[in-house]
Image (tube, rainbow, N blue to C red):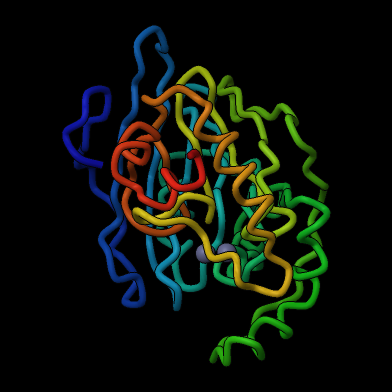
Length: 252
Ligand SMILES: [Zn+2]
Ligand SMILES: [Zn+2]
């Protein structure tokens, strides 16, 4: 997260990164106008697909939620949560592709109280990870994941006092969900709009028409909305509207 207004990069002592995570842990303290409590967003990127994991906390309430759990990536985030005295109340998954939930058991072991949320349509994939490890020829053993609850479209969630809305955004995967923070204008976007492109729609359960509808829906949110995608760098919806050719095509 660069020098955009409203986001400051701060440098308190952080745990050393794991050797598998190829980027340093980034800590952003995000304080939007009119919001006095401390919203903190931490990012770590890693695993075989270089997937982003986000830890979002309400520091005042000492509660945090982890968004996605890529392989070899969650440990530094969980250590930070422990060091700061945060209760991890949830692991909220954007979808059931292996690179977004592989480390779910690590989260469960360190924070048994964290509720794992996943849309029902992606739960079959998560229950049988070996189908994906075979398909992609991965050197990983991923334990089967049984979510604690289904997510539904427009479901309202809370992290401390932070309001979050789950947006069912199928296309890349039938049970894909993006998480919108309306007050802070922030979107944890999963593999919908990623790295100047969009998520792939050539997988057996992808649907390009649903993808178009989902991209249109998300792009109708305010342009200033910060987008934290499942891969690549943070961006804003306005930047994507101006520079992402695939998004422009789907909006035309
Ligand atoms: Zn995916
Ligand atoms: Zn992904």
